[in-house]
Length: 441
Image (cartoon, rainbow, N blue to C red):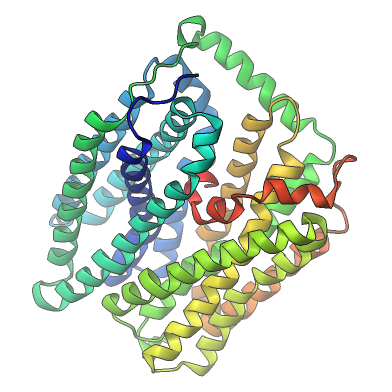
């Protein structure tokens, strides 16, 4: 394979910045925006959870993109689609039926973003040699997370600043105009900068052949020894996470008289966009290093316990209800570090236990789809559970939700050739993998 004639630094950063921008708008920004607009936690969790299904089902249509000669065309088209969708959301927020229209447009944005993920990762692999892929993997994660700094640490802070001056709806309309301009500019640049690498095998494929292969891949996946136990474990691993990661930020914004901490949109954005994101990255790198040193099988109980850190932190915050912003910021830093540390366990479990076999890449994609399904299920019901329990009991409940995953460790079937020391090569870029949710969502 011939590497791209132009330097990857001309297009890898902008490609993955655009990828992260779309993802974080749908999965993070939308929920915080709805909270500012007075939408209930149950509706926020339910609808943003449904939007997450785009990343659950993307493995089912990803093979059909191989029928297209140019992944660059798909990428640019999805980026312009996203930019138009963001602009339309800005308009929808000014209409009486703003909520329904916004959800519909976010639905389009989610599926465009999921399709963009497939094409972007495909172009990256097709345009770069194995050595280049490894060399620029850090740039992927860095610029994917740079978009999180922009959306949470920049635009969310700006939104909070504007809410007090021009009103909530006007503020968010302006934010989505800015997002549309940024993504549109990225799409225009990428239309020129992305390599025009063609899929050489596209001419030999047809939809019927792809469908047959997809059926074979799924059948082989479901016939793997112990796969159903593994699926249950994956879903249970994310049972607590999906709930606390959905309700936690809403709890920070909730009025103090309603049991929350009463932070402004600007304050939440500042905490998550700076300390929270940095702590997650550090935790991810440390988790990968720890697992590489100890081996997955021995490290997994510790990683599951680390996933309980966010639940304990939010429970403590709901009991103590501190008012000092520095205290809250340190607590969120600990929460996100624990989250990043523990989450690498699920990535490695799918890589080393679920994916191996003759369809390793496809089975990894299916495994991450199951992982996202577990997150979506728990996210979707989290709002109803929180409203029924209140914040303190809810966060205590999420701690209890982590116990089943620990118990499942006694029932997992590990590959016969599994060697804990084999974890080290697989975790070479594990910190980057965990820091780049696009790879696993």
